[in-house]
Length: 355
Image (cartoon, rainbow, N blue to C red; front, top):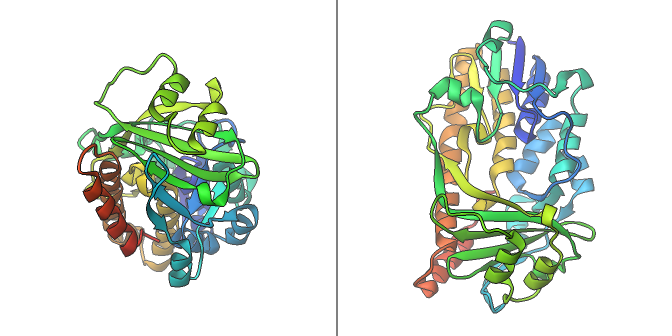
C-alpha cells in the first residue's frame, strides 16, 4: 500500500510522521505554517519509548549525540528539603535506555534533516483541510492543540479544558548543577528546573488560579513575589530573567476524543491528545504516535484497516497518560494535606512514570 499523504503541521509529531510514512512507501508533503524552524526553545526529556521511536526513524543516534543524559532530579519543598528522588538509574536498568535531554530546535533539526528538502513546505498554513482530501489519499493532522484538522473531524464537540493553573516558562543563561534539577512543590504552586544545554537552564512555574485570572502587570515581579524566597537556585534563576524571556499561558488539555481517525484522516500528537505538561510526555507521545501510524500503514492491507489499527494502538494509551498528567498537575497544586500529597507522590514515583 502506498499513495500521497499530506501532514498538516511540521512540529515534532508532523516531521516524524513524514519520515515514517516515506519509509512505508508513501509520497509525503509536510505543511508548516511557520516560515522557518525555530532556532531557540526549551529543553525536552526524551524517554526510552520515544527514543526507540527516534531509532525507528533513523535519527536516534544523532539525538543522543547532540543531547545529554539526564543524571537525576528531586522533588523538593520550598525550603529545599527533599520529598522524593527521581531514580533515573532504575529507569535505565529497566528499559536499557536513559532519559535524554535535548532542546526543541535540535530535535526539530534532526527530524527535518531526515526529510528531503522538497517534502517540507514552510510558510504554508492550513485553515481548511477539506480541499486536501481531494489532492491526497491520506491527511494527517499534526497541527497542535488548536488543530484545524481535529475541528474539521469533530467540530466543537470535544473542546479544550482549563486545567486549573497558569504557567510561566523560559530559558536563562545559567549553569545548573546536576543535583539541582527537578521540581519544587509549595502550596498551590511549583517551580521546575532542567538543563537546556551548556550554560543554559530551562525553567517553568505553575500556580493554581481560576480561569481568566487577570495577568500581572509585570511577570518577573510576580514570579519573584511567588517564588523569590524559595531555595537555591530558584532566586538565582529569577534574577536572570529578561522581559522577553518569560512566556505566560493558561494550561489546557483536550477533552478525550472517541476516535483519532475518520475516513482518510488521522490525528496525532497534541491534535489528538493535548495533555498538561506535568509528566513531560507530550513530545514523546507524538513521536510514538508517528511511528505507530507508519507501522500500521505498512502492515495493513488497506488504508481503512490501517487507520483503525492505529486508533486501537494509540488512543487508549495516550488518553491514560493524559489523564495521569492531569492528575499529577492537580496533586502538585494542592494547598492542604501536604503530608498526604507527599506520600502519594512517593508512591507514584515508585510505580514509575510512562517510559
